[in-house]
Image (cartoon, rainbow, N blue to C red; front, side):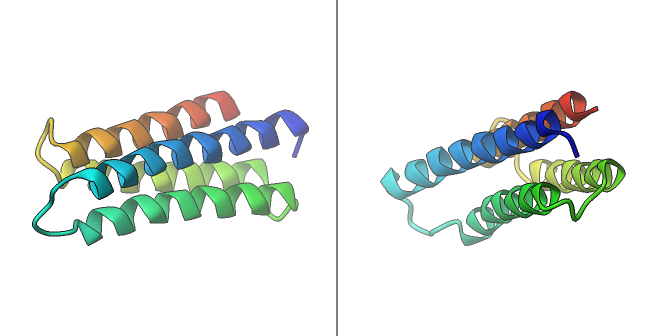
Length: 110
């Protein structure tokens, strides 16, 4: 895999991590009666997925085609996650932001 594609995946990890960090800070600073563990697990799983994809690509464990399949699978999961929240809710907006990042990564990667 060429350096440019590795950089694209690295930027993806950074962008996803920044959105996740902001979301976790927002949750921690809110006066919530119940901690949204399912939401937190979902956004953490996206960060881990992107990180593992980047590390494996950097170690030449994935081909370009495999990375494309992984990105498509992640996009599909993010659509499911996003649609499980009410439109315009915080969960929906965060998942939509993550979806946009991964979509842009997919486009740039190809």
